[in-house]
Image (cartoon, rainbow, N blue to C red; front, side, top):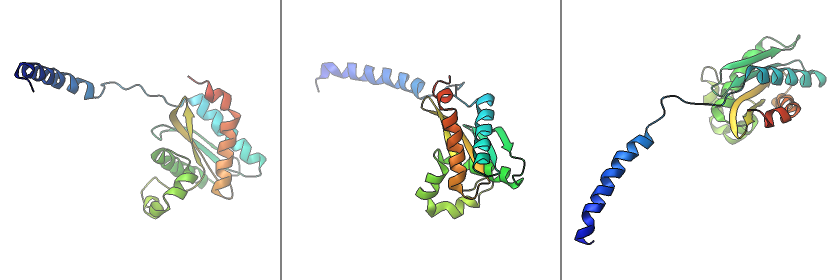
Length: 169
């Protein structure tokens, strides 16, 4: 290296060291996309109606991106325990970030351990709600005779509101 360039390199490194900490520092206030109450309510309703048409009495739970409850709907004859099961599936859907059925298939090796964690249950029936490429929540069903049927009702709700979800802001 030429001796005459050495001071410029030092100056560049000094400037870089001053700039980097600013860009690596987290924001003081975060803007996050999250599912609204109206969409959550309508998804839960569509899912329960889809299952009812198929002859199943279920509970639907919709949570936001942090697994906070946004909507809970239990059909008239669905056992009360379906709400708790759906809630625990919802926590897993948010933690896993994907379809809970897919999570069960991919991570069967840790299913038993996860099922022992308070508030989690690794079962089919939960789907992420994605708006504009952002996961804003999850819809989860419990009560149909099999997780695949729970997932089908959740999928039917997402399909019924697909246009609304696609153009949501």
